[in-house]
Length: 277
Picture 1 (cartoon, helix red, strand yellow):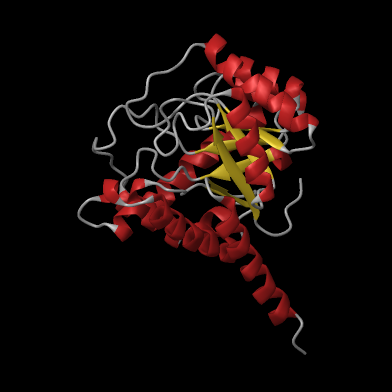
Picture 2 (spheres, helix red, strand yellow; picture 1 turned 90 degrees about the vertical axis):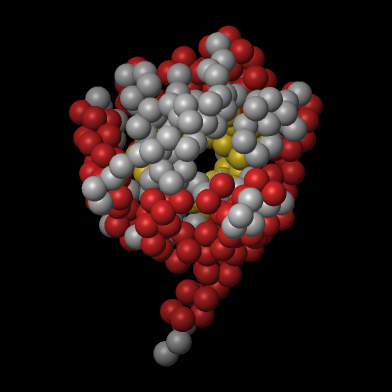
């Protein structure tokens, strides 16, 4: 796995109900075209998902999820794109790997279906383990952590152990602290302030803050829903700088260009500092 510099993972939601861009890329032609736009905007990886995980979203059938993602993955992979598949279903992940995907991005970290860990072990595909406490029924539902950073790190550590026990190579694992999933704004900021804790766990770190509500509140504190995509993308680029400075392997974003420039700026500063005699 390439771990040099911070990579940009572009979000491609083939759904009618994702929180930011649901329905915008729902047809096959629109989805493929947007995937190409993401690559041209600087994305290194395209994260293709066919099921929304926003609070209150209803799960789609396996057949519907497959119908949404497989044709798009096949076409983009045929054009040379590096694809991750965003799914909690082992069957969808397996079919997506067969169609040309290279990475499994499971927001449940193998808790939704135990077969996901076995598939990762069999295939050798890199597997993103996200911190997850179940499906989100209500964005405002109370959630408790005794110590946010410690608790999330320990729960991710348990998922690492489960994956390794299932036969997944530790070198194939990627960690995601799950910003916004069973976490309020304070929890998210605490995690971002201590990304070093997750980097120090010795595995690639994926940071996925793009356009989330806690970022929108920066632009519109009294009414986050009124924040524009431009506002949210500006905040996202700032998080990309923080993630790159912390040594994150990748950031997952809806608009890659600003984050590509931000990550490259951090790399340029590091290179200049390292070149000083």
